[in-house]
Length: 273
Image (cartoon, rainbow, N blue to C red; front, side, top):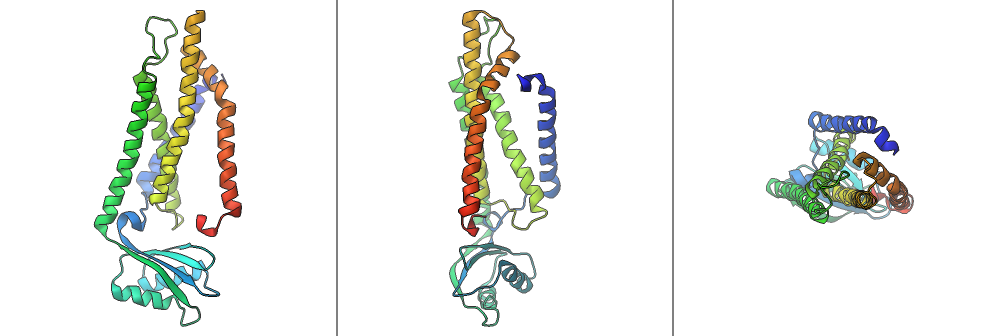
């Protein structure tokens, strides 16, 4: 009942966070990776000792005259994302990564992504998110289609109302991380929107709707029980009871996920980041 009692505070905080996220998106903009804008992707590894990521970044940027994204891959490997390179630029950059013969680089792969392919990937990523959102909302509307009962005092929400609530919560869960990445992208060069970010968003949607369905099911159960026992409690009270009944489960789900992520941070390879 704590959330219902102080619902205005929680509405204000959620609204403030969403407003800040939207401001961040429109003010800073989302920095797209090479996968979505087009460009070149080169993966190199070094035999024996190799340079640091900072040295590789500096070397690439000095040669190309612009920003390049360098990500560690394995113990002595790096993935470079740059603007679209010509054949001569590609060969010259690879040669410069030997640092005048101080290191021995090996080119593991080189991919050239044209602007049209990047635009196609960007469109497909957006369609994937919209398709998932639509599918989830339609499923919620169907699953809870018989929840409302207009003939009772404590009638629960209708199926379309459950679907609308789910859509709002999912939109919240998409906008907030997108806004955070827009802000981080203005500070850190590595904070880019790529296919992994889209995958993470879809995972967030999965976790979010999983908890939401559990809460909705508790609301439906409490509404049905209230009707049978004729207590005629307000819907806000029934929603408060439903939230209270799911706190522990939600916390356990979050903690389990955090423990798995913590294990990846501690024991995972540097390429995980």
